[in-house]
Structures are given as structure tokens and as C-alpha cells.
Image (cartoon, rainbow, N blue to C red; front, side, top):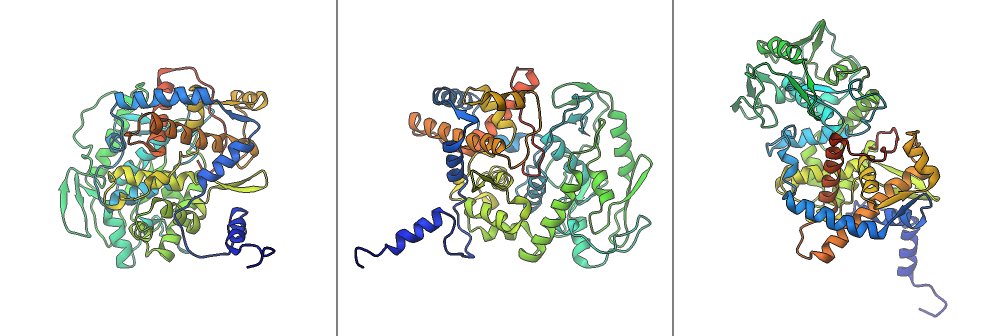
Length: 468
């Protein structure tokens, strides 16, 4: 090669850095989320990172995590998260993270959408988890991917036969009958357990209802009536079972999810319905179709395709599922955040304790999950600050459009500052088993704790989207 000729390898690297490299169908393990976050941080003008504040926060976070013995096992310790290490749990997590977005409300606490489940009133993310658990208790197979598929002629409320063995099997996957789980696929029964390995709520005595913040409510009789209504329901694979809730009769054994069933699953307390409910239905239908077309209708097959790589699984989700393709344009460059794709991988890793479906050899490749809660906490810890104009918009709780420069800066700088915190902890505590996933989990839990305690903090930014 002469001195005047360009090195072809260098040219290819340059093309890739500019996003114009050769097209390939290969799904790699490099998500580029951290690279894009650094780019946003380097070009941000409305969000700044305070290095001294970040150093101080890193030590505070580490010491607090040590004091609490905080680890990935914290995920499974929550009463609503599934405990079993099986495919039903995998399906539950996939459903949960498909719908894990946009729970905030401008209404007062007592008027916003919430879910009453097992004598507690749940809000925010936990209201989603509670609604899914409640649906499974009521015999609605909301976590079965084949149930999400759309059909031209929906089953009528007067009842119809379920056609096809697969639909019948999927529907019966998560049915509790007389307090016992019937798993048709393997024929075993586990008394007083639901599909997530938790004890059946039957037999609880009447008590005051507590919400997630400890506030008391007296709506327990309504739940007890519902439990009584469902107690004697018959299971017959050739007929539609009907769930009676108040004056409504719902054909829950329909082999496909309808808008009516969706509304029943996510019915709640308060003066508003679940935000973006129609978008959530669309997300489930799209995901069900992609699983059917590309992964034999199985989330487990999707996991297998990743070959034990967390990064590759994130990219598989973003490549095949439009609803996971969380990206935007910042400063004329495409940037990726992939919040829900990453949190699905992290949740599987934590739920399965790094084993089985949760075994990934590159879990540290994941970044912080760019939402609206963690940036709020990073601001309270003195890690990030806002320009006067952005600060005013956030404090006055004005809407920030999805994909806007401000939103990209809030999300990108948060990802990068958590990476700085991780590096600082590793440099001062070389033996620390720490990654961005655990820091994110901890910061989210800390934000919710401080909110319950009434600690003063800047409001979280207001952006309404399916990405977070």
C-alpha cells in the first residue's frame, strides 16, 4: 500500500464511528448506550455533572449499600416480585417490563390511579406488578404471550369454544382453582401457590388496607367479596369461564386479549385510569406477534438466542421489537437509551440470581436505566445540576417532549454520572462487586424511600412516553 492510499481498516472504523459502516444482520453484544451517554454529556449545555458531588455520592452510596447488605437478591425479596425460578416467572418479567413505563400523575396521591391488592394500595411501578398478580389470581393469563395475539373475530361475551390446543394450554398455564394451582403442561399441583411461587391470599382475615406509603384504607371488604366470587369458579377447557367484578361479567378464558379484558386487568382506584392504557395494549399485541413470528412464541427462546450475553439480548430486543427501540436524535446524532430492554435483562438476572435464564457473562455491560426517578435522585445527591431555564421547567412541572434536547440531556447525563459513580467505587474499593444495575436499583429504592418520608427534592421531570 502506498503512502497516498488510506488504510482500509481505519476507513471501516471511521465509517462505523459515523454510523455509515457496512450493513450486517449480525446482532452483537455492544449496545452503544454508554458511548452515546458520554457523547450527550460532552455536548450538553443544560445539564451539568458536578464531579465533587459525584465523588461524595459514590462513597455515600457504597457505604449505604454495605450497611443494607444490598445485592441483586433485593429484587426477589419484595413481596410482589415472583419467587419461583421457572418459565412462568420469565414470562411475568417480560410482561412487566413491556408495560413498565409512565406511571406518574399530577393528581394528588389519593386521586391518582392505584391498585388495591392483598390489602394494600399500590402506586407507581408497584401498581403494575400488583395488577398483573391480581389478574393471574383471577384466572386471566395476562403473562402468556399467545394471549396477547390479536384475532379478527374476538370471542363474544356470551361465550365460545376455545379453538386449538395451544390456546387452551396457554390459558390454563396460570389458573388457580379452589386455592390450588393446576399446571396443565406438567400435571403437577402446588397447593396455595400462585404462578409466581407466592402463597395464595385466601384465608386472610379482614384488616385495614395499607398503601405502599403506609396510609390506611378501608376498602378490604371489596377485595374479600371479589375473593369470594372467584372461590367457586369451575375450570373447563372447552368453555369460557366468566369473572364477575361488580356488575361486569368478563370472558377471561378468551384465547386473546381484548380491550375490555385489558381495562379489567388494570382497573384501579382513584379518579383516573392507568396512563397510556391503549398504548400498553398495542405494546402487548406487537410483542406477542414478534414472539410468534421470530421466537416460536416463547420468551425462553428469545433468551436462548442471546447466547448468554446481556448486551446481545438488549440488542435482540431493540432489533426485533419496536416497542423496545428507545432512541432519539441529539445534536444531529442518533443516540440509544434502551431503558426497558436493559431493565428486562437486569430483572431476569436478579430474579434468577444470575443462574438459568439469568446467566449472563457480561451483565456489567448494562448501564443505568434512564427514567425519571433516578435523575431526580442524582440531583438531590448533588451529582447533576440544571441550567436556570431547565431548572424552572422541571420545578414548575411543565411537560418536556419525548426525544427533545432537554430530555436527552437529562437521560444521557444520568447514565454517564452513574458510570462515574461505578468507576469511583471500583477505584476506592477494588474488591467491590458493583455494577450500574445495582446502583440503579439502589437509587430507585432510595428515591421511593425519601418520597415516602416526605424528604424535599426537586420534582422529577415530566415526559409522557412508552420508553420509561
